[in-house]
Figure 1 (spheres, rainbow, N blue to C red):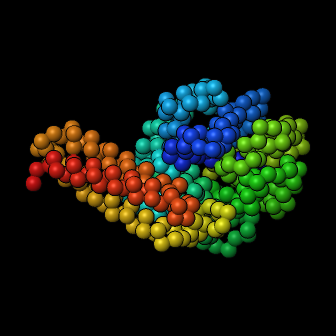
Figure 2 (cartoon, rainbow, N blue to C red):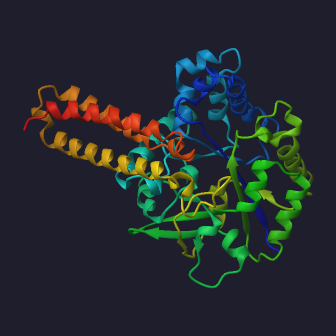
Figure 3 (cartoon, rainbow, N blue to C red):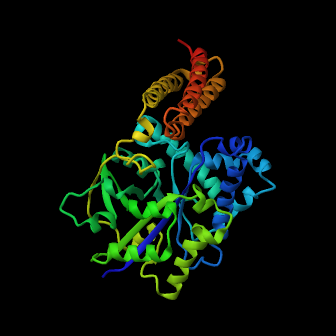
Length: 399
C-alpha cells in the first residue's frame, strides 16, 4: 500500500451584507456564531502548527464585510476582526486559495466577467490575508468548467478543486484513481492541475463525523492504491451547528480535528496531513483528463446541472438579465476607451462606469440565485442601478 495523504479544506463565505443584516434582525445570534467561527479557526490551530495543514478560502463578499468599519464597530464587543485577520496573515500552516470576488457560479455568468471577479479578489485577498502568491483556486460553489483554465492560469493558479464525479478519464480507470489522484486539464492552450474532492467524505465532514470512523473510511477507500493517494475533503467552514457550536469540544475542531492531529503525532493515524501545493510538488501529475462542467452537491441537487441556481423561471430570467447588463457595460466601456478623452468630464464618466460594473458583478453573486426565486430581486435591484449609472456615463460621451 502506497502512502496516503489528506488535504482538508474549509470555505468561508457570507452573502453580501449578511452579517449586518443578521445583526439587525431577530437572528442576531446567528451573526455572532458565524463570527466566532472565523475567530476560532486560528485559535484552534495553536499548538498544532507542526502537523496541521488545512486549506481555506474566503469569498470576496465575506472579506468586504470583514474590512467594513461598520461591521468591525458593530461586533467590537464580540470579536476583534482585525485581530483575527492578523492571525490568519501570520499563520503558516494554512494554505489559502483564491476565489471570485462576488462569489459567482463562473459557468453561469458571462465569461467576459471572469477576469474582473478573479483579478479583483486577488487584490482584496492579498491585502487582507497577506499572501502574495496563492497556489490554488476554489471556484465558488465549486462551479467549474474547462473554459475557465486560461483565466486561472493568467492569474498564476496552479491547481483547482473539482468534484471527482466530473472527472472524465481518457482511459479505463479504477475508481480509486479517479477520486484520489490529481490530473492535468487543458483548454485554449493552457493547462492546470485538477484536484478531485471526495464527495461522500466531504458530506460527512460538513455534517459531523467521528475521527475513528473517518480514519477507517480513508483506509478502506485507499487500501488498494498503488500510487501516493490524495484524499481531499472540502466543505463550508461556518455553516451548521457542527462548526458554530459554542461547546468547542463537541464540534469540528475539538471532536474531530484535534484528535486527528494527535493521532498523527502518535504515528497511529495511517495518513499524512498535507498542503496540496506540497503534494503536487512531490508528485506532479502527468496524465490528462477531461472535466465535465458542474458544481458541488447541495441539500437538494447533485450539482451537475446547476439546478440549485437555475431551477425556476425567475432564476433563469435573472441570469438572462445579468447577461444583457454585462453586454451593455462592455459596450459602454469600449466606447469610453475609444472616445473617453473627448468626454465632457472623463473622470466622472470613468467613475460611473466603474460603479456600474461593481453593481453588475455583485448582482452575479450565487447567493442571489441559491434560494430559488426568493433573492433574485436583489440581482434585479443591482442591475437597475447599473443601467442608471451606465446611461449617465454614456450621456457624457461624444457622439
